[in-house]
Length: 184
Image 1: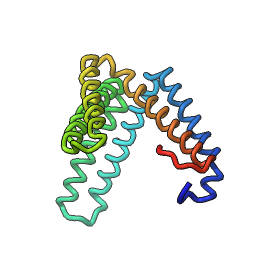
Image 2: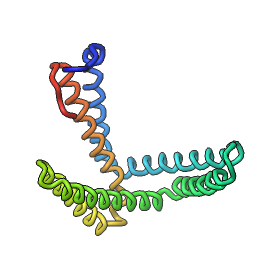
Image 3: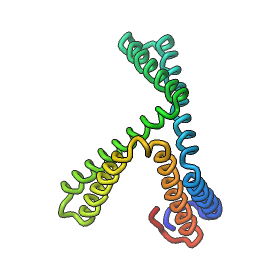
Image 4: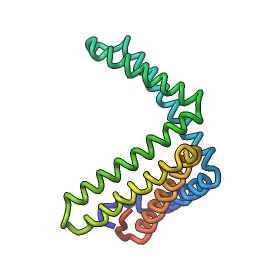
């Protein structure tokens, strides 16, 4: 494998182990998607709250001008309140996160369609358009299931992501072990 440090290449087993653990975690997320969704929602809430408090501290510690202080104050209050709401109203927060995720998939799909159309007639542009169209259709379908899908969608997406990342690590381990280049 060109450009791979020998130390990294000799540690292919660690990448394999991480990949296997990620796949197991992804399968676990499929088994208990509601619990995983709640855990993700609480983590997001905690990060918002902590980040908001840090911004509020910056209001008093920054040497920047009043514009920066007002910005830190507004953003700090918003993030702190949002984080506290997510922490103390987890089901409503889960619904909000799910809606944001569905809208993000929809917008991402539209952007991919536009990029694919602009890239025509380049090879692969049709696949980009297809992938974007699929994202738009999936997001529209999920909107028909909203808000019922809110309690499990985040957990399912975490499961899919973990399995995909785990497969990538396993593929990387294979490439390192066999000294071949692999796309991950």
